[in-house]
Length: 352
Ligand SMILES: O=C(O)CCC(=O)C(=O)O
Ligand SMILES: [Fe+2]
Picture (cartoon, protein in one colour):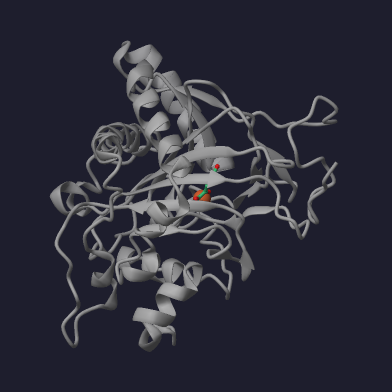
């Protein structure tokens, strides 16, 4: 049994697990079932977002058929010959779009044992003019596999549908802490910058490291993650240990990103999480959807009645949190994709 360096608990899902902290399960459809159901939903959301930063979301309205279309196209993509996947190599994209092969991504300075396809809004490339913020590099075209047209259809449809779900969820979350549900409308809308990742964890690396993806926080507002039945996602809890998030069929694992922590001065928490490699040659697939605002959004402090109780944002000199979204995302991309950075953005390496 593999043990993570920081957790006294087994890191792989196991029946022998001595202890497991279940995440709250929250039903978004309760918002439409009358004032009493909605009040209960708000109490659950408030508590989960304030104390944990993670929960399982059901009642989201995404159908099994849609989910199957996406997951089967995802599996077909990773089953393509490596040459077909490398035709989409993100090293050829100054916009950090396309395919990253296993071991080329880094978190916390160490290698992540996963490969992935990064997808964003389909917009023309925008190379920043002198004096413009460097984060405009993050806008640009996707790279799609010619052999799998259904992947593009499923992925773009998924981004659109999940944008709607995340938008509803954010409104209920803001209402749950007494804020105006439309407070952040100006930073989303047509120019929002959502991000979708199709991810495969190809089992354990031969060197025995078990880092599927290292501990990190997500950059934006909310992440809605589809995970398969294998397990391996872990969340850091109040006790400082990483706890398994067991797969719940039909649910999205939702977590809050850094911008919500910044916006609420730490009242809502962005939580560290990581993935432990599956054992042996077991493959795990996951699809995180990141609900992010416009690149040029500056996230204003949220007006809400609990603000006086906010503890302040986490301060980590290795991971400064920026209120300007594009800056926050570019910070992460430059450090996660050193080959793209070296090839296209060596001039940006000194933090601004
Ligand atoms: O694959 C997972 O379960 C989580 C992935 C993740 O946290 C990320 O890509 O930000
Ligand atoms: Fe994440």
